[in-house]
Length: 375
Image (cartoon, rainbow, N blue to C red):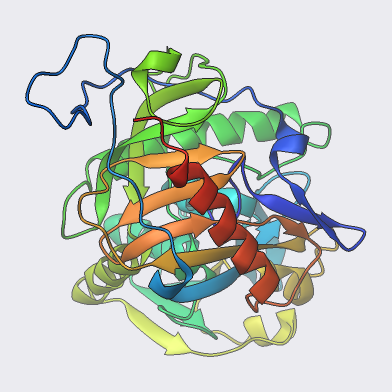
């Protein structure tokens, strides 16, 4: 999940900030219970004592960074499609909305399967966010030399700002997608889920984390342990809560490792900005993967693509926080580089600048949440 895409995220409409939950409803995927240490101060804890969790210490003076990311959203969902560009083959792989991390390996698999059969010679990838890097790595694994061309490199990409929860969220309009796209989406999810699983570890920054979600539990093949929790099974000040376990990606570390893997395998990265398809046609490679994200709108004339801004506040790390939360008060993801608090969901906002009043609202809502723990 990228910044501001959780059910507690807010969005702007008519100059006001609205809660994301108002759009998506409260029916969220849930998860299984966890035996938790009690908060009782005495050695003898009664069987009816409420389980507890360590509280996040939310305070303005603990904020170490604020960020705002722009999601490349298409109502019709991500675009994975092949077309001719002069004498070149151009394969598009962009428009992931709030699911860029989650879908990265999967849509890249779809893209290389469209582009590589029958191709000979080196390959170009435009864009060095997570989608560009995963595409380049899969090209290498298939035995092709690759060069990545990008105007921005990690850590200056939108992917570096992403929250990193493995959950496809806010990446299409139900009324705008086709059955063919739904099949692509299902295939991308399946491959990406398997690929991230085999990359779990401290070196990549991919970990399984228990996640508490405000709302009802629903079946989900990617969260087999989901379960609704009763009011005596958790400390959160909400009426309905579910729990599941899912993967989280420490994006900065993951992107560094991925870029290093590409370099070790002989890949090249060149800093270059393209102003038009005509400039892309000057590349020496005859197969080009377009992974430019939001930039694809201007570069290739996709008028359906637009930005959705998400803002995050990042707190001083708390190693004891080993769970995540997602609800009407916002979302909290624990990472070694800081506690991420989100977020906002602001359609058609192209200014990637954190707004002081929105950050203050994020801080205040999480203070209420964790200050209201019932334990």
